[in-house]
Image (cartoon, rainbow, N blue to C red; front, side):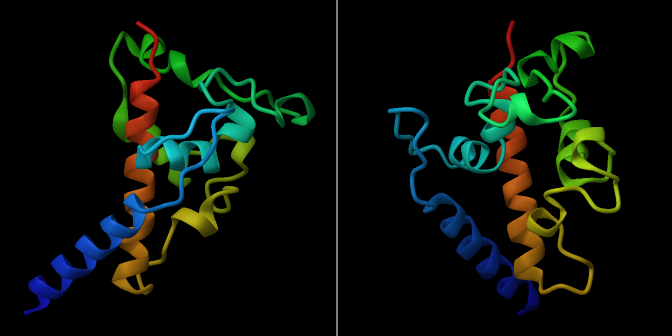
Length: 139
């Protein structure tokens, strides 16, 4: 029965992630949940196309990375796990603060004692944002 409950929660969370209200990227509307989450959480610094040219970039002490070059900087392979850990705070990103308290830590990370639904929601957002970053890679 516990597996059935976990599956039900996962399906409900996935549905809620996919129903996030569309976010405007300039004049463009999108129905892609991974892109919407990226635009909501990342584009203000990294820009809508991931080039590091977001609206807040000029006022930041550390210039945001060009996220379109990740695969190129890794021999043509997108390091999915490393990127995932950079977003969730397990891999320290100087601009995000320490690994213990990244800017997005409260949004994405749920402690081991948090409800399973909170843990799945955070992991789902991380998965979708990382998947979107992979689509931004320049050849």
